[in-house]
Length: 399
Ligand SMILES: Cc1cc2nc3c(=O)[nH]c(=O)nc-3n(C[C@H](O)[C@H](O)[C@H](O)COP(=O)(O)OP(=O)(O)OC[C@H]3O[C@@H](n4cnc5c(N)ncnc54)[C@H](O)[C@@H]3O)c2cc1C
Image 1 (cartoon, rainbow, N blue to C red):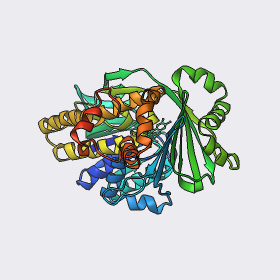
Image 2 (spheres, helix red, strand yellow):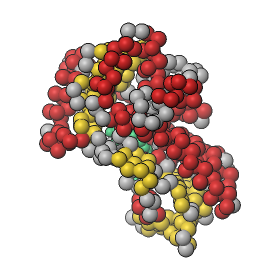
Image 3 (cartoon, rainbow, N blue to C red):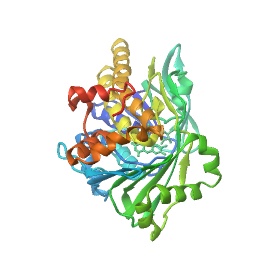
Image 4 (cartoon, protein in one colour):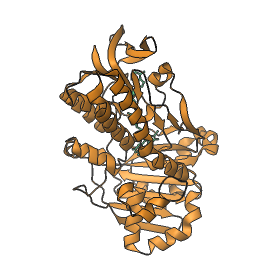
């Protein structure tokens, strides 16, 4: 009997397991994948996520892996260019895009170090029930056998297509249409800043990562997905060439180090995040278009929230129920504004509606730095002046 079984061991699951194990809870962490491994994701980590990694004692470890610091940001919409420095706060003066196989492995190791039991190559296939309450999971283990394990709480951190959510019958709280598709790969020796280019219906992002390579991602409107997927590499290359010519020039002499990764499943939803004996975090409970790149940070923050709220109450049904209810409320408070901003940004025409504003901002370095800091979540909503918060409260206004 465990206190908690966490299904999924990446940026939502491993920190949850780590934090609960640090509280002295008995935790089992399962993942169908083997580690270290990559997953479908680009990987810029926003400031709130970096702050948590530092708080947990993991940021220095991440930097020791050779993840390059990035201190400049370029955002270009057609002819308007905003260029500024990364805003330092509380000792963090750069931003980072660690490969997932590095970040996720580091998180797994931290969970194991804290005392969680980790079983890779273990796929959860079903939940165990006692009446209406989830009391454990059934999983296929690495050796091919089937095993049943029990716990006070089962946490589904098993991604957008969560088995835990499906088996628990979690219903959708919010659902919005899919807006984009995304394709990315890696380019050896391409150095630079965090670069974001917007032109016509294309959005291109680039950032240095591990192994002396740069990640370059391109977003297309969902309506073009069928056309793009027929020859995605050609579409990708042509889009980088026409949307980000100066980046393209640097890429031209360089080698593509990996296959092209891509997805049209940029789903936008919130699922109900808990029931009796179960909870969902990370992409399992909430997913949104990756254009604003907040999923990793969101996952780390939800792990922190859940572990803090439920950790002390695992042996008391009534208190556990209240803690989960509070998690549900706090989760929406945290993620609703990001969801609204993401849906706005993921309409690729959106930047054009504020060209005048961008042109004005680009002419003033302080405004440019502030704009970039807000856009990249380097400033927390609660730290903004009142008049700015009104414009960024997720009510559909621009940021
Ligand atoms: C194209 C793209 C680009 C992105 N770019 C960024 C970005 O730049 N920055 C950012 O912050 N976010 C980005 N994201 C979002 C980010 O990848 C996710 O939000 C994040 O990975 C969520 O983490 P998670 O731990 O919840 O889920 P996942 O990373 O999906 O991990 C789920 C884990 O659960 C395991 N699992 C699944 N089913 C089972 C099962 N039945 N039994 C056992 N294990 C199971 C899987 O093997 C997997 O390891 C991007 C996403 C995409 C698709």
